[in-house]
Each structure stands twice: as C-alpha cells, then as structure tokens.
Image 1 (cartoon, helix red, strand yellow):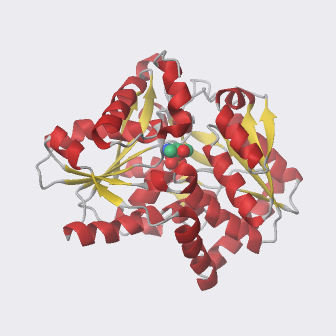
Image 2 (tube, rainbow, N blue to C red):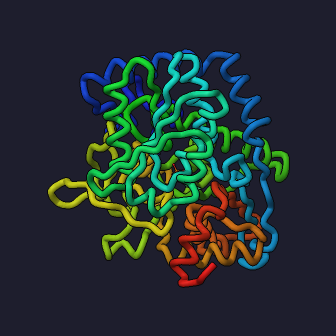
Length: 402
Ligand SMILES: *Cc1c(COP(=O)(O)O)cnc(C)c1O
C-alpha cells in the first residue's frame, strides 16, 4: 500500500512508480505530447464530457445493469455475487467505452484517419464502429494468424467500412500488429490518430484508456450503494492488457477495505510456458512504449503469449497494473484454459448468460473465492464481454461440430 491517493498517479511524465513512461522514437514524441496536451484539456471540458456521457447512454446503452446472480450465489453458498453487465454494451464488450472517448478526442484534434491494432478483433470492431458513426477512415492492423482465426470479426470490420492490413512480421499476432500501427503513426503524423485498445502503450494512453473505462466502476459505486447501502467487499476482473479491470477498480483504489483481484490467463499452465500471465510469471522490461511486466526469455526476447481466450493473449500488461502489483493494492491470480471453460459452462447453465472466454477466467476465480466467504460478503465481477464471438473456437476446442 502507498501513502496518499492512488489517484495521484501517473506523475506528469506518465510514471507509475518505476513503470509506464514514454519510450518512443524521437519522431513520435511531438505527436504523443500533442495527444497528451489535448487530452488533459478536454478531460476537463464540459462539452466533451457531456457528449461522451450522452453517446455512452444512447449509442452504447450505458449504464450497464448491476445484476444479482442469485442462482450462482446459492450454488456456491458463500459470498453474494453480482455481475456488472458490460457484455450488454453495443458491440458486446467494454472496448467501445474507450473507443468512443478516443474518437471524440481525435475529432477535436481534426484527425480524419484512424488507425488501430487488434488481436481477437474486438478492439478492431469497436474502432470500426465509432469510425462508421463519425464518417472517419479506419485502418486496422491485424496479425495474419489472427485474421485466419477470427473470421467473423474480420467480416464485421469489412461491413463497417474498415480496411484491414495483415501483419506477417514476428509471430503474426497482436504484439506485431501493435508494432506496425506505431510505425504507421510515425509516417502519417499529420492526419492520423492511433486508438490503442487497452491501458498500455506510451503515456498518456494508459491513463487515458483507464479514465474512459473508469465509467464502469463509477456506475457500480452508485448502483451498489443504492442496492446494498454499502460498498462491496471484493471486486474481480480478468486481465488482458488490463483496461476492463482498471475501469472497474479505479474508483475503488482508495477504498482500502475493498479487496481487488485481477485474473490473468494461465493458458495451458504456467509451467508449460504457454500462458499470458505477465504479472504472475513475467519480468519488467520495455515494450510498446512503456515499462511493465512482460513475458520474456532470459535474453529479454518477448515470448509469444498463449490463451484459449484471444482477448487475453498479450505478452504485456498495462503499466499501472505492474505498479499495483508491486504496491500490493491488487492481488493478481490466474486461471488456466480448462478452468475458464468449466466456469463458462456453469455460467451458461446457472445464469442463462453465455459469457466471453475472458470473463470466464474471472468467473473461475469467483468459483474459488466465493465459497470461502460469509453470506455478508459482497463480490462484484465484471462481465466484460459476451460469448458469441467465442463459440467457434470453443466448439473446436471441445471437438464439437456446429
Ligand atoms: C479485449 C478484451 C479483454 C482484455 O482486455 P483488457 O484490456 O484487459 O480489458 C477482456 N475481455 C473482453 C471481452 C475483451 O474483448
């Protein structure tokens, strides 16, 4: 724990303790500084915030409901479990919250060309959606391997008018797509805005993405106080780059009695090396413009991440989480592929909710945590995405024909 408020971070250079910062090419520096300057201005601008809130309501469908999962609570016989229903958002996950915020900033900076990276395609779809809404050109960098495994999302992006650029370098997946997007940005400085999809990248991105996603925790605070007249005892969210979890946690960071749990993807097991658990099994290093925990080999080469859930399949993690881990404010655990599938099935049958495989990781931890608590313990899990996108890969994994 630290003295003072967790909300005083990052410092003005984008550092969360030793993490974060702005490790970028000289040519990118003026752009990043410009984004920071404009963001800090509009963050306090009433018109900007009013537009964000209005579209969050009318276009995304916020506030997302807070739902008491009665069947699951009775089944586990411990903590009272709530789901924050961000899977009900337009486009099916939390990613659109951030895309809406960033596109509103891009418009005010007069940038008409939007670029993005995507792994599973969820961030690509959310970006293509807000670009369609505002009539902006949209270019999405995507690993060649991911294009093959995520066909429905590629088709969706095409329908929405985005251009997809296949990336063949490196492991032809998310981290390489992010490298390409950064390269594009350097060479198209004048008219281009880069919408990063998680709380990673160079400062101000980790802060900005967190701020836009913090609408999740702000709503939750109001909803739970109305429902239970007190704050929850614990919050649980899954961790890819870390944006939905920070969005949920941020308004509770200074409420030190509220326990916070982030659930990473343990893939086939930490010991097999096939996982995406940067905080549980990685070491600090520099990638994509910031210092943070990374999955790397002894020579410092970034290793490929693995998870059944494409959205968690990232070898890094937003820098704020690295700091929250070291300060002990958030506890980071992990769930393996098979644990997530078990939790996924329980959720479908008991609650009639088909979750995405990402929050199924969070749920897997809830299944362990909740039975050890008393009935007075209030636990809220972020249901950050719905499962439609995962049905093909799940059927393949379970060897079921659909
Ligand atoms: C992308 C994605 C994630 C992982 O990203 P975070 O930045 O860690 O939130 C988690 N869940 C869903 C549904 C996603 O689409």
